[in-house]
Image 1 (tube, rainbow, N blue to C red):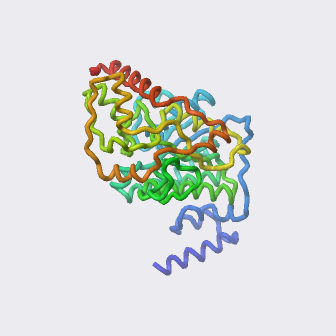
Image 2: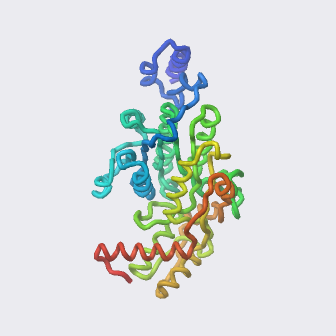
Length: 375
């Protein structure tokens, strides 16, 4: 084992001196992903991006999660259907196939990702692939592989091809020692979940590569995102989606968090708009590479009371999930997004009242269209 490492180190030294080609070294050495680009980036080259007048060519990883399809729809309206490619490892619904390009892509398959970027002339990469908080705690090894190894793959590719690179962070990037009410952009983080650790790792790696090599790295810390179209996927804030479906189907919701657990939340349309506006903002306006964005903050009890204004029969009971409650108790209660508002004009459109009215209306319409009863 030690001999193998010495051989790889010796070969890497020859590679950096220009004695060996990249193609001959890569298959035989098991370094972390960054040395793939070491010869190029150690020469202190910086990225030169396409002209602002050019339409971006966008690749979205993890596109069948909560956010990818909606973001692709918005970007396709602005830049053209063929200029936005959605990817995932799952089979999409028929309407996803019919609405624009979809390609199978595993973020752990570096070679295939590189081929997609090269053959499609990609200039923007939106990296949504990740295991969420509660699911990640149940399978730490898989979360580490997808959330960290997968991230290194796309960071390498963004460096090599001078892409504008976006990855979301989250309230999960904070920990028990962080300021909670509100949490500023810059503070102690120290999360205690693999999900949060991977997000802090992504923030810091992206910022490092920006400052050292000029990578156009951009990151937003999302609150809990609430949407109609995607079922809950293992996040700690998922109760705030499930409660609407339960209210209109059975009239009863069993919540896994305490009724007084306050967390920052956001309507998905605000989340998409923030992402697009942030990606379109000239670099000269950005004082940070990672920003908080905020919209509202509420507890399960406050959300239930707002829903009961529309559906008085809704009954909410509480059966605590110790894992999710512990996670929620380590997260911020509110975000301070002063810098995002100042630097690129961020402002949410949805508060709690608007969120509840829109979600109930949208889910009711969806259930009616599917022939399902509405309570």
